[in-house]
Length: 97
Image 1 (spheres, helix red, strand yellow):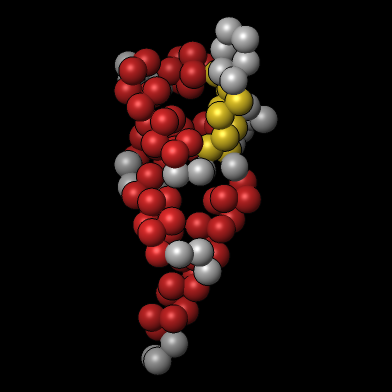
Image 2 (image 1 turned 120 degrees about the horizontal axis):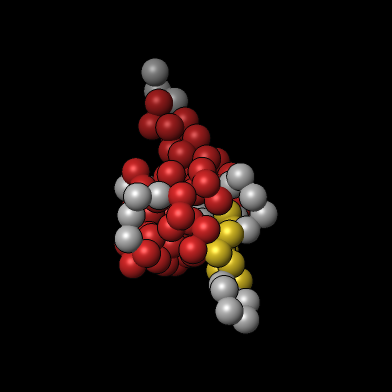
């Protein structure tokens, strides 16, 4: 299981409904530029950019610089790690029942 700080950072990144919706949107394609994400939501471009930054810093989304439009993609392995970490936490906390 990854260290608690890394797990907490990823859980914190998932704690905002807009970021969960952004992850869902990103998961429907291989990658999207910020403009494509902005067009899908009723949020300002700066707000979407901030949410994407948090997701990238948590390691849940990959940032791929492109000439004019940077691309964002879900890191599916990182999300699988979050699921495994949560499962391990639940198992360790509930194993005495």
